[in-house]
Length: 58
Picture (cartoon, rainbow, N blue to C red):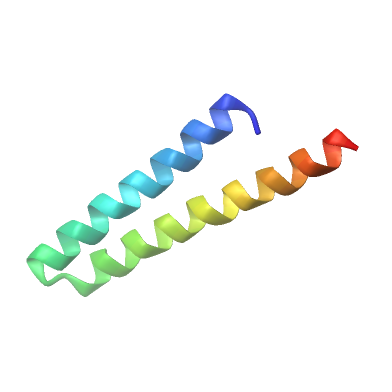
């Protein structure tokens, strides 16, 4: 996984955590759900990059 990809995935997760926390604090369920979705997106992208890396090593 390239450094740019790692940074992008980490930014998705961090931004998602911020949105989720803000949504939780303000009672905004929509923002909370959006934050959870951003975190999931970051996790999926990271998993995809790991799969690509596993095939590159062979």
